Image (cartoon, rainbow, N blue to C red):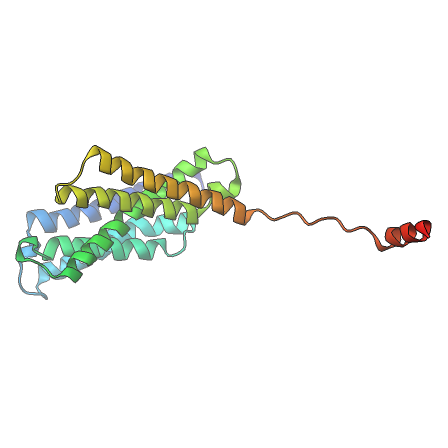
Length: 211
């Protein structure tokens, strides 16, 4: 594939993703599809389709290009669930606890899909070893740690207990945890050197010489 074909493919992908997310914005903000009470109304069905199609057309090519296992499925589930909860669940109606947990989990996963790519791109520049540069396990772990940190700050802000000290403590905990996991990963990946065994002939010669 020539560079012109690759450039045209990327332009089409960017345009398609932009149109899909603009459709999601149009249905949620402009058309206010969340106010529709009929579950099977035409606009709600269009919203369901858009909530799945937008992350699919955005993240499936990325997962195929970088060969990240289950990354596209993870992104589709996370972003479609988050869009559904934000659109059709009224926070003023005292939603049940399980719905709040669904919102938090989908928010963490959605942020992690973006932060994973940022961590992977950063690893390409910072890490010298090939195993660390192209380690998707590390990138995904760092993406989730960063996402949990951001959502934690958001929860502390909602509870009116967010401060510089609490944010710094959370950041320090996340940083120390990642440093520990990186060091453990290096030790696990290192193959211990086996001691060299003396040849049997050499041992027998030494014994005969001593006798």
